[in-house]
Length: 140
Image 1 (cartoon, one colour):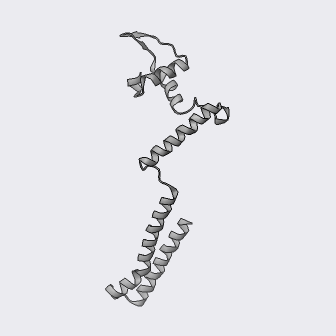
Image 2 (tube, one colour):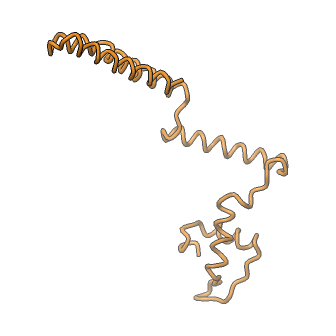
Image 3 (cartoon, rainbow, N blue to C red):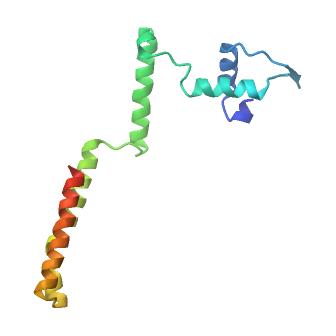
């Protein structure tokens, strides 16, 4: 069952024992269980359905749960899957500042490099102002 579900044998044994699942026979000295019974038992426990609400945990269980959650956050941060909010804000600020600066100078660059007419430049200015305002609104 452990190989079938890709889980540790000890975990499978413990969950089957806790759920009081009975074997239906033996094969090569190992207990055999029906997968339609074992699957829900293993994965309901894995999805946290067997986890008590925090209010019902003993102080020790609660402490172990919080410690495991803190370790999970530390691991996610170390693997760069979780980023501190200040780092995100700083990066977002740099990206938006760069885009804003480019949008501000776009009409001048078009006038200098492309010799656009004043009507076209004013239309470019209207469009870039709209883009900058939508950026501002999205960030807010």
